[in-house]
Length: 387
Length: 82
Image (tube, rainbow over all chains, first blue to last red; front, side, top):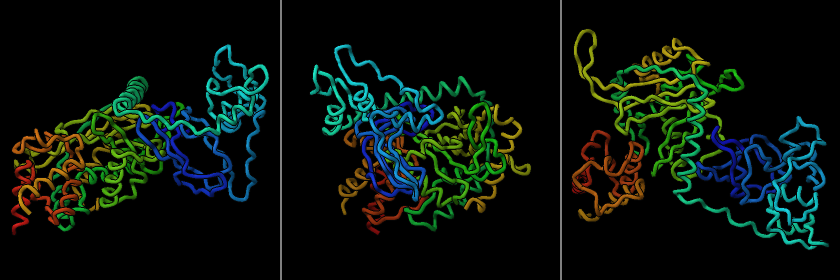
């Protein structure tokens, strides 16, 4: 079960999209998981052949639980774990432990319930609730056959959480991530007002020549400028893990997306530094559509290296962002407004936007953060470079 | 296409991005953005849907004319009559 963000503890497997024996490739969607962020498509990170699906649809499992076993092309298939052996979760996820270490004891299921140890382990592997298994063995003891019969019974359909439940869960998740951020991350904040008149008129001219389906929103141009500026200040792009900054070579640019009814998700545009304005718009459009309709992918929620929040549409001029851990920076944009501006000694009306940077002082210093905002300003004065 | 049909096309397109919108109580002379909580991405999607439905490609420069429901109906009625 992948961690789809620092705030996730468990997920419910909704369906498998692969079968045992099937060949899978890096990046392929293999399962759908229900989380507070909606139904997420889980991608696989290795090429290989699926041997065993270990978790039944409808089962809620903690982050880190093994969902399936596969082997690489050319290797021998992984044997189906036998009930007496260490459960696959312990075998794979906790390789470092000695194999004879007993699996974590299952939660007590009531004194009246008699279960053979093998059946108990099997039930845990299969995610079977022992209180719902009918014993057929002598003395009312649940044996392994009883568990496997229960596993074959149709799994109850995963309960579809209602909208209110989903929003409440999402609020909890945001609360946990933001509380952790404010507890752990020593934020510093920088802001600057950028004249975006040139960039806006350049984009207006571009869009004039495009049909409505190909138009680029100014928000996408800002994302493009952020991704390019990060090349100059790489210490804002990456993760703070285990007491050290781990820079990321690629820019996986998370975009804060408000959902109708009050939710918020921040999925990432992968490899944003390689996307021109048009590609960035396509990626943004696809991401917003899937965020609102469901169908985000696991990698989009787990590997963002920096976040951009744009609250311009809501009318605010300045954003003071909270960093999403383990990232180390958040860039905020407010509304584009017309303001008096002094250019070469003359007073003129210009379209300007307030750009802010919230950054983790453990990973960068204000001087470097300032260079980032300066790079952003410079790029927005040369919009042709953002094409 | 008469004004009622244009109105239906516009409210259908708006309803696709703001499913909870109640057009019976919407003030047709006040800005849509404030009443329906639509952002620039939603608005672009509305323009795409109306392009599909009415065959009218609205240039960005004309967006301010579409700020209210009445404004949008007037605009499309004029474009379709031309």
